[in-house]
Length: 163
Image (cartoon, rainbow, N blue to C red; front, side, top):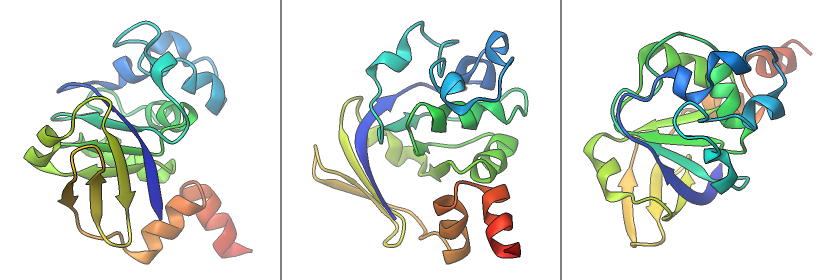
């Protein structure tokens, strides 16, 4: 799978309440959650995002509560990928289950600036920064994980396997 989009950079230790504040947890509607994505970080943050864009974060992204609404809000905002230095453990697993690709790239994340155009190739295992011409390697995703993401997460994946 190949994802292409503009980067939207956020800092270290962004918790799930910054990603989707508790006051918006009255719905499970993906688009409504997406419309309020990152509202706890900055009011109106989502207005800069276009479908296909990529979130780029620092250390420990997704810390805090284990709410599944956080990765759903990111997907609902139109961002299929988050690239970060590191992720909180529970957020990491929840994200794949909800159909959100996470890439942990360590200090290489510092080479991505807000607004850079990125291309993520999951089969080749590389993030290409087409703005700077640099590449960040990552372990290619196993076919089963690529299939899980293509289907939109764990529940659609299991439903397709049982069909």
